[in-house]
Length: 447
Image 1 (tube, helix red, strand yellow):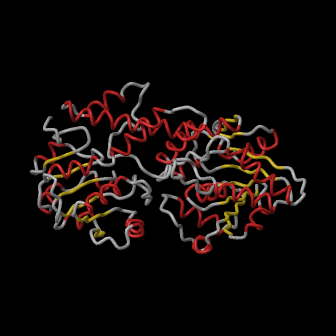
Image 2 (cartoon, one colour):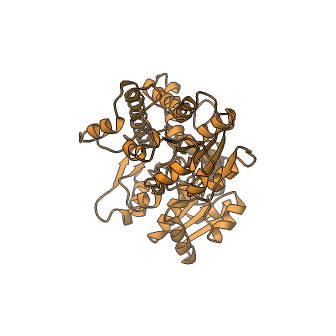
Image 3 (cartoon, helix red, strand yellow):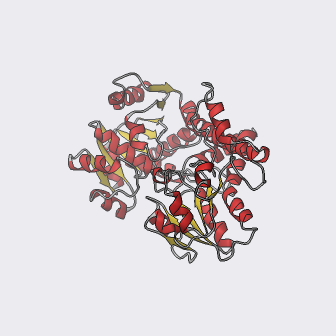
């Protein structure tokens, strides 16, 4: 099949590359000429495990193309995917200007039947707006051309997006017409060899499914962080509590790990957008508002622990920071807890020596002229001359460090762990105090 994808970010590029990998012919369109030039040269703008060789292989095979020519892109595919950004507005709503701009371009240049597919995460009712944007441009041209609008939300985890696409748990397709249903069934046939993964439903239900799924996962995280904060005050160990909870098959172990807050491009934005949609329909989504509030507060917990340890005086202190991306296996720092921590440390007069396996360039881009930031080539270099160690991201290479080396390198014998990676007794054998989330010694003086 011939497919056009608007947008070459996480969703668009992964979608295009993986569809080409199973034999479809894909053209990815983006307005950023420099980005398209780099993609044609095989330079991937994001870090996503497994993506680079798939892009290179399918570009060389001629199944994956890149363009900035919107006319060429609209003409290319019968299926037109919209996979552009939907950032949060100031009120928390999803900004649809890029989505509707693409829809207008499709209507302006299409000359035959198209299926317009919303792949971006969009609020309920967006398909109606996309349909009107396409129809409006066709009316301006006095063109009587048939088209359909479909909701096909993505369920890709950053750091595992290629595997998620190639081995999907489910493929949600929202459509009210038979013709696009058959085309989408054909499109995704290669991913259904073992069993049927496509779930067809009406458009609005498909749009809501994406938001509901992300909101549910975010809720589990915020709930565990709430319980972790309570565990500290009660002298309980949240890791014991987590294992006890997770052993219940009705709860399970997924997404019940406490920490210093969730970030990324999806959960924060989608929870806000769903709460905003609820208010638009005169419904107060109290749970969603609480999930967001708990997460926002959780991002301050690590700073509070560090500040309390030093009696509120951080001026002149140097903090070694391991982990900058919002999660492992990505260089994405959108809404990352590390950013909240660093900015509060700088405001308190402290400096930061940071290391992350993949997010160093992104950190430099976000904070190009920050005098209180030193980016280090290794995690060991980040320790040299630092007063303490703080961990924000649970990269695998941080899980079994040399604790004796840590104790020898930092001035204060203390580790603040925002991801509960370690055992307090193990650090204690090396003379290190250990402050984690909801366990061990804590700022309230209990065990």
